[in-house]
Length: 341
Image (cartoon, rainbow, N blue to C red):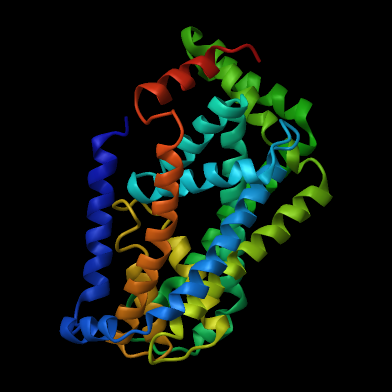
């Protein structure tokens, strides 16, 4: 079970972001914006978003090919369950849930599939930072009354160092597996207590096996291109939802918004990224001159449109399969840890 302090830390961070997002707003005008929105535009937006979810399922299938060839149609329900879990649990617990379901259905070790999930997240972060860097020139010319947006440039630089550095480490680990395995085993043998050393070694080696898809530069490039397409499709949803509101910004501005809000949602937060999505989203649009109440109404509707459809579909698929969060998950984790490497 997740530790209670993680939950309360997430609640506290969400509260801070919500305060930053809502301070000074006329909530009556925000509600009026929400009431008068043209919600028919949600239909193409949600459709485009689910094309992106299918692309995510294809990407995961591609990353898992060295371990087991699993059709994309099999991966799609598992991916939606994972995103449902991320939306209703703290600390992105949906990633563990989808790895456990994949183990239950297809026999792929949890440690190995979690390695591919980590690879996904690193590529996602690199593309999101690319969206931010691509629009830094515009960001420098924006107004300075938009709260913490003025610090985005520094955040993007440090984020790039962290995530591109992590990507390089993973690529090297995949390209030189024997050297990496030897280094990892040496570190484990030196720092891990004897009683859990063998179990830790097994988990680590299964994790390294999950990086095999990055061994080929062609495969790594394919994952990168797919990731760019995924996030452009999600930005397309931002654009369609915007048509239901009385403001217009460029597609590039929405790319910047998409990049910033998704970087912010890597922070611990309440379930559903409450606050960490909304605060930066409102601030970006305000920086582009959108009236704050309209920006807030749009961001809240967009957040709901991103949350409800995938959560409802994920819950539907989750209830149709036998694995349940709790004892079933713990049993699968225990079984995979005790399997021979």
